[in-house]
Image (cartoon, rainbow, N blue to C red; front, side):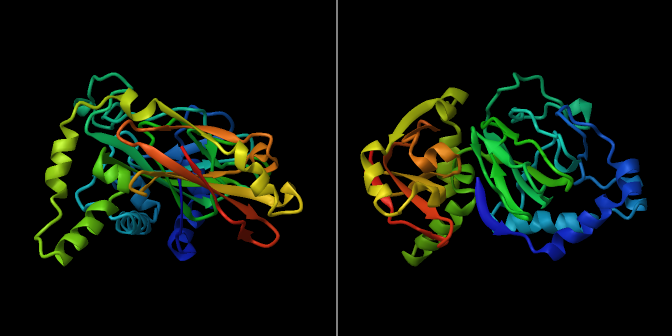
Length: 328
């Protein structure tokens, strides 16, 4: 999902300058991921490597960005970097497209073979492989992430989050000459409290608890209880809900002269307690012109959606029309 959190260009520029140097890229960024088109990458960058140190790879700037991300999303200081790829950088050119896949929620391909776990690839234990990604160079056309079949038109230097261990994801094809350069920071994050709130729930709950004279929010005790429940992949990924706004389309259209004025829409879903449990950005033209007036989403079984809201955005005026609310 998009976060609208933009890294300062001064933070990412040293990494961009380093990888745009042909000598650096051709000599040190030589792994070729199994994706279409011309692409090279290097992973395990959280583990300093002597040849990269000698090549003046900007390790300190990379680690600073990792810290910025952890602080922004309130990840605990002891959050484990996932061992399959860790921190990585990827450079790709015209024709490249990441194929649709999901990533392991356990050590399936780490650098230390003695630690590799022999588990089914779709195994889901107490953590979810979660990646915080940023394009430090975005192609003129293409290269957008597509997560759970939703394309996100991310900005250059904008952090986006992918629950890579449960959500299939790929990218659109890179077109034209500007390269796609990705930084990706991977973590194993507790599957219940930390994932649902991206680490912010405990911080908020603790603040409220202290206002009420309590020592803590009890989040860790609740987390231990919830993580010991018998979850499985199906429970997290296969509860479908149909969101239908066909009866509201007339009300939407009345607010503009032409549906061609819409460039995107924000869809949010709330539960009966009015907590937001799902949000996504709709970009496809059939949504904008009304050819499609419904959408199927999949939510973890512990969520019970009560209503959803659609806000269509007008490109020229750079503003939203009045929101449309629909009970589920």
